Amino acid sequence: MNHAIADSTLAFAGIIQAAKLVQEIACHGQADQAAFEVCIRSLFETNPKDAVAVYGSVNAVRKGLILLQDQLGNQQQKRDMELTKYVISVLHLERKLSKKQDMLKTISQGIEMAREQARLFSFSHENVIANLADIYVNTISTLPPRIIVNGEHGYLSTPDNANKVRALLLAAIRSAVLWHQCGGRRLQLLLNRKKILHEIEKLLGNP
Image (cartoon, rainbow, N blue to C red; front, side):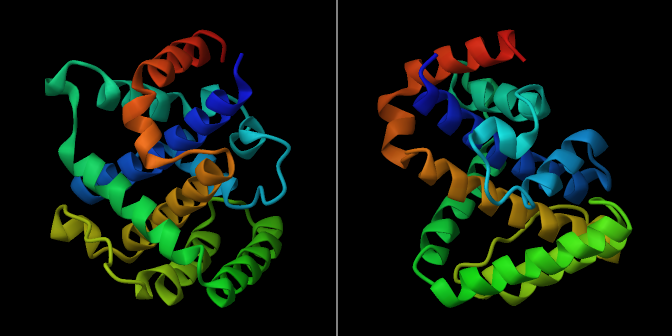
């Protein structure tokens, strides 16, 4: 297995999985709980040995891998342009964030505080999610252009859902950081599309 491609593919699956969950909550008011917890837990894996360690297992980002397969595949009817827009926005903001060391430090400190809170409750407890949402609001959401989430106002106006969306966007940014650390670059998505699709098939076959 080409570990560089495997790790960057898993990281990108993490981005797209978090973005899809944002979309699900915004449009339906709920999302896959197991996939949601994977995304939230990834925020606390700050010193992983590889991409798998960030998510716990390959199977933990299976949803993201399948979505990435659809987005990169030849069947255009499977592509979700709104999802693509979210992912592109996340990648753009991550690059801006990478140049702001003070903001990165603030995020890191906030996550450590949330980690202590999670030890008392759980990683997906509403108090922890609210804390993570506040981190996003006070840091990344101040960078232009802000990510505009489309959906049903009734769902998005609910505080718990709004917090989940923001925490998931923070998780998407975390996976984008990992993707770049693994050598991921936007141009590679075009130039190495077939290699990435082949890697996805291998990963899905070996959870």
